[in-house]
Amino acid sequence: MNGATPWRAERTLREDMCRIGRLIYERGLVAATDGNLSVRLDDERILCTPSGLCKGSIEPSDLVVVDFDLNLLEGDRPASSEILMHLGAYQSRPDVRAVVHAHPPTAVAFSIAGQSDALAGAHLPEVVYTLGAIPTARYATPGTADVPASLEPYWGRCDAIILDRHGSITVGATLWEAYLKLDKVEHAAQVTFMAALLGTPRPLPAEEVEKLARQGAERGYPTACSPCATDGVCELPAPEDGNGLSQELEEAIVEEVLRAVREMTAEKEEQKAGSTVVEAG
Image: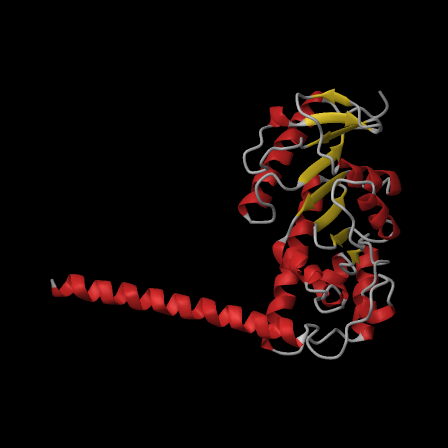
C-alpha cells in the first residue's frame, strides 16, 4: 500500500486522537456526541472517530478506518456523517494530514449573532501570524454535501474556518496541530468578545499586518487567508466602525454579565451569612 502507516505509528495516532477528543470535551469545545476528528493513515485510508460516541470517553478500539469512497475498512460503527467535510479538506489540500471539527461556543456565538466579521478582522497579532484570519463559511445543513461545498472556497488559503451556526473546522499536518488551531480560534473569539464589552476593539495597523504576514509566510503559515480588515480576501464584509456588535446584542451581553455578577454576589452573601450563623452557634 502506498505510504502505509506502520502499525506502531497507527497505534500512536489512535492514542493521540482519543487524548485530543478528551481535551476538546473537557474544555467545552464539544458537547454530548458532537464533533469529529480524522487523520490520514496513507493515500487510501483515513482513521476517524465514529458516529454517536462522546469524544470525552472514546477509546482507541472505538475508532474506525474508511477509504476515500467512505467504505468501512475497520471498526464496528459507521463513520460520522460529517466525514464529508474532512474529505473535502484532504482532497483540496495535499498538505493536510489531520482535521478537527468542533463546536467552540464563543466562536459559534459570533456567527449566530451575525458578527462573524469581528473574528475575520486583524485584531490579534498571533492570529494574523499563524492563521491569517478566521473566516465564516455560509450556513449549510450539517451532515450533508452542502457543508464541504460551503468550505471549498476557503481551502486554498485558510487553516481555520467557522461554519455558520454550526462549529469550526481546523486542519494541520498533525492532529495536535489541528487541535491547537482550534484552541486558538476559541481563545481569539473569547478575547474579541471581552474587548467588545470593554470598548471598541482596535485593529492592527495595515503595515503591522503586512509585517506579521511576511513573518508567518517565512514559517509556512497560511497567510494568504488575509484579515478582512486589510484586503477582504475572506469574502466577508469589513468590520464596521465601533465594537463590531449590534446595540441589541451588546445590551443583552451586558445584562447577562450583570445577572451573573448579581448571582455570584448573592451566593457569596449567603455563604457569609451561613458562616456567621455557624460561628454564633
